[in-house]
Amino acid sequence: MPSAPDSASNATRVYTRAYLLTTCVVFALLTAAHLWRIVAETPALARDPWFVLITAASPTLSVWAGVVVRRTARARTTRE
Image (cartoon, rainbow, N blue to C red; front, side, top):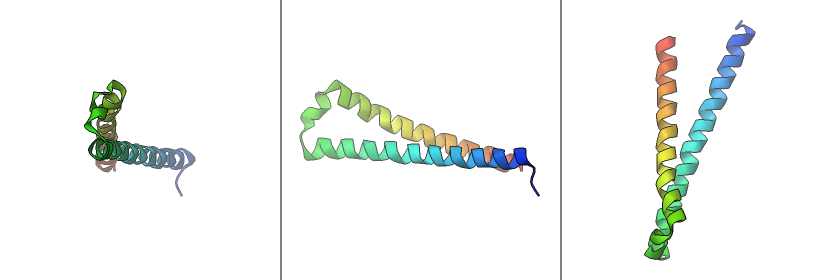
């Protein structure tokens, strides 16, 4: 039977992984929606600095979350 700290640590890892995967997907969808909007509506959106900033930041955050998920998965497998 696992001790209480091990099960709590495992639950924390599961919740953290779920959060990171959700972050990755949400920011990837935001990027896709912004690019679709530029194509569908008008390229004039590309001149709005806030739109450009959010469009540039969202794939960065998505990739970051994906990298962190992979690193934590690798770190967990090397510890076991």
